[in-house]
Image 1 (cartoon, rainbow, N blue to C red):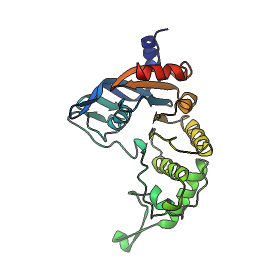
Image 2: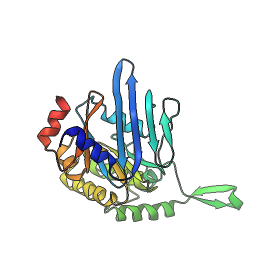
Image 3: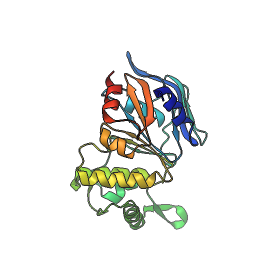
Image 4: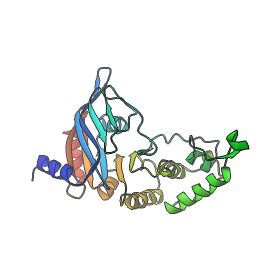
Length: 257
């Protein structure tokens, strides 16, 4: 079976939740994405891999509306459409994003970071006075971390957490609204084997009823967890294959040749 045949079979299976059609994006004279088409199906893990500058993170952030595309179309099964005239950050209820830089507030506790920008409030005086309901946020934070299989003190300041704990917190924060799609930008970078295994277990559980898109340089983790692997090279999608059908050396060859 040829690469192109594998692509069409992979993309035609399942119900799509997100699709990009002929998407291009440039930054000045740099063509970051060149006519990229991609479908993300229901309840699958899709990994996007490529060398530095291949366009994988640009594609990821274009899919969620952080970057406005120059041409093409991005459509969600919910009806949301992004193109060169219409862009919005598709975050929260539709998509949860784990950024590479994690974007946490170090001087605030764990539970406040999970609820950052969406605090639960108590109302007093008929709604005239609103006060943060910290105890409810603590309880819900503990419950969510337990459900994901993560142990963490919710009152601890984030700056006192290890890098691995901060990555877990970033993952939990993105999951709080239980979005149908999760996108993860380099989730395994600089983590211990223990933390990687915890994240892998969480991803494996989540894919039963979520779609997950991962950008990663860790090809071994990608081959283990991904249903499909999309290979980017110089802004173009050069392959879209089953994670079980391709060896690490073949991925590397597609990335550079």
